[in-house]
Length: 397
Ligand code: NAD
Ligand code: AHE
Ligand code: ZN
Image (cartoon, rainbow, N blue to C red; front, top):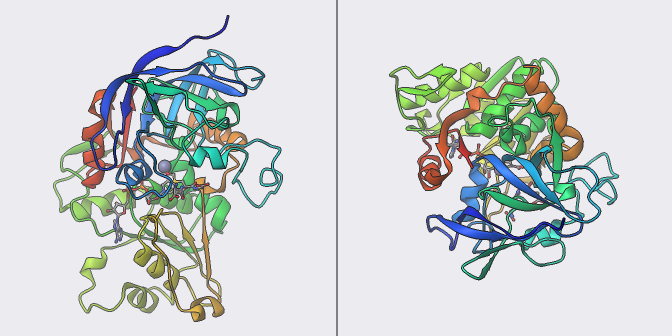
């Protein structure tokens, strides 16, 4: 039987910087090579806010945001073989087609099969599958998880174990996989290394978790947001004590494995942070990770990487027109500047393995979840993220 149009609820971003509105939308049936999924849980990532704030050069409105989710297949289009209705899935904003030059190159996870149309907010045939009040609504990062139903390409999906905690493994759709993969795949941090992490959101904390797991001997956690968390009980694993907020952040970072903490605002003698770090941390770090999206922090992270061998990984996303700079001498004297997308994971091969690690308990996600909201509270969720008062907020779609 040919699937029909589904009318369902979705959070539509009509314009940049405006709150989303919960709307009734029409979701068209999946075309050739496409899959329609029912989203079960979706989490907010800073990148959703980045695009909603109009900072994304590929940002296009009206759009359905969201790219960190779990779902269940509702129907499949012509030729779809790897999933069937009823399968549990995680949508992947970096697909894996196995055919393109990038999928065939072990050095990258950046499948390019649908990158151009995905960046234009459409499906590969340059049309969209969402309508609201008679108007076309664009796709986002090939996922658009802030909707009851989404249409995604088969290559942008991986099937996962039905026994997985579906309300948690949505985090493997972006932030946690990215931070963890930045350590394992992009930097390939060795045991005994020293590591500095800038930005203690879910991504930065996942870097700390990965660095601890590979046996880093020293992990410096850097953040400057002084009112990051509300006081009081934040989430199951960590009962927040009544301490200064920045201390709460650092308690949390220590919870994940940080051995040292720094709030750059505390640098009394106002030397540049990188100078302070080089002078006070044995000449700098073997690996540094920027998980903020701030080009100044990116420079600091590079310049506190150790002379001769330090590697700095950019994870943060900086807006249109933003550029990084440093003296070439920093690189000439042995530092390496690199970046990561989705932690370097080849997505359809890797995410099911990460889900398995969650099922067998070797990868823990609870500490990253600060709030669980009904879908209708999505605007409040964005406010909390903007206010720096949340880690990952899970929405029940
Ligand atoms: P978040 O907003 O939850 O966390 C950012 C943290 O940085 C906050 O704790 C904030 O207090 C801190 N911060 C802000 N300014 C700072 C400064 N000047 N110095 C130190 N700390 C500072 O964000 P997130 O969801 O963890 O994402 C972090 C970044 O990574 C964002 O830019 C996001 O777009 C990007 N991201 C990239 C990828 C990728 O594939 N490359 C994947 C996911 C997220
Ligand atoms: N459209 C944005 C892209 C920004 C960006 O770098 N995105 C990351 C993922 S962030 C997920 O939270 C990424 O994987 N990029 C790879 C790609 O192909 O875009 C912009 O700024 O242009
Ligand atoms: Zn993300």
